[in-house]
Image 1 (tube, rainbow, N blue to C red):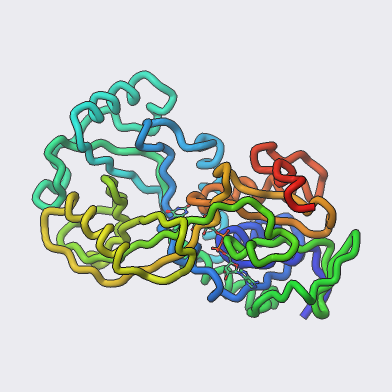
Image 2: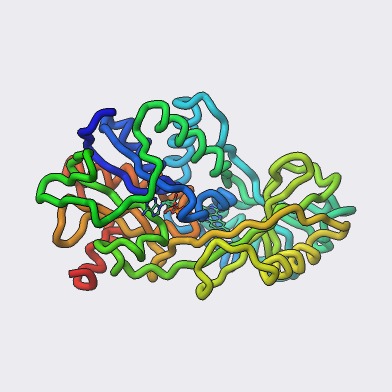
Length: 354
Ligand SMILES: Cc1cc2nc3c(=O)[nH]c(=O)nc-3n(C[C@H](O)[C@H](O)[C@H](O)COP(=O)(O)OP(=O)(O)OC[C@H]3O[C@@H](n4cnc5c(N)ncnc54)[C@H](O)[C@@H]3O)c2cc1C
């Protein structure tokens, strides 16, 4: 195995995987170190991206920039590995009130958001299965990444190309110099930590102001709902094949672990009962902890003192769409000294960690 790398990446969730592939595309040598049992967050993510925030019907942060960038990134990744894990998806919004419908139609015709919103109301969307007496409308240009497949496919690639150490990263073994790091027998210009919420156990970056949020989802079986669209009303329902749907998600800022709970099972199934008129069967549940930051923006950049240590984290609820765009930006900053967007630059929190 090559012992000299441009970058070591600690963590192979969405953040670490996207950063590693972005670096490989730029011709950089990377070593990925990951013990995949430490955080389930990326493995359980639904992988959806909705360009619209439903509460206020406004665009999701940077949707216009993130969507074309991510589409290209994931389609390129599919081609690179000769696999399939990314799809464009319509999202069905089921209306709960008449006012919501009026607001939608107004937004659809008059505003910049309108390009993502269907201009008419549909009244015949699986009405024998889905409870939608007021009708529904569609968000266009949504997308879905089959995250666990994306991670597994890249893990295989890293393994085959001898770019992976499948083990717990032990911070006490890291030797830091001003222009390089050494970990065991491996040397690199820099190490970038992509540990998700486990960054709280990283002695160099534990001061980052994360506000992690546990989330749970259920896999349920609903017969005859033959749609490829993501359905949304109180919960999202992502079709995953063979009559199965991934339904979620919950938020819990207290119990930060990957344990599946009865409470979440009840919460999700009660919400689902309000959308689905027919009996459904719960097949399984899963849980993970989202690495959200206090200002709900990614946290990217170098350590205030040790310039050979970096962080790529804080992806919160939207890792799928944020990671590709900001990985590219981070590489521009690392390799060519280009500026990082002030809203994501870790320097906004300097003073907390030194
Ligand atoms: C229920 C749920 C649903 C979600 N749905 C969506 C969605 O639809 N769309 C979306 O965009 N986002 C979604 N998210 C959010 C998304 O999952 C996160 O934004 C993303 O997974 C964060 O990725 P990450 O790589 O930063 O962290 P993680 O996924 O936590 O990855 C960190 C990796 O580092 C490893 N690691 C940590 N410490 C060490 C160490 N010391 N040594 C070795 N390895 C280590 C961990 O095991 C893990 O493999 C969802 C999250 C949850 C919980």
